[in-house]
Image 1 (cartoon, rainbow, N blue to C red):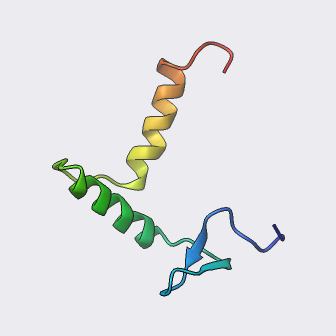
Image 2: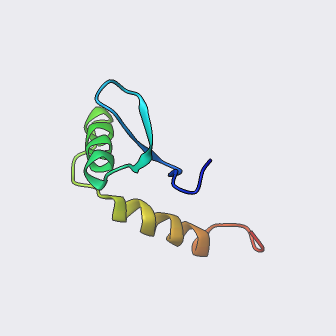
Length: 66
């Protein structure tokens, strides 16, 4: 990876990775909405839900020292 590359790069309209472009919040939100609908889960979820859920798991359930 180069310094200007992103860990999660944007995808072009044809599905080709765009290493110098960051993945947009709107794109991630669309993926979350599609996954939630496909799973038959009712409600709205945002990237914030996943960020805070991971932190909560770490403090409540992760083995000590990890």
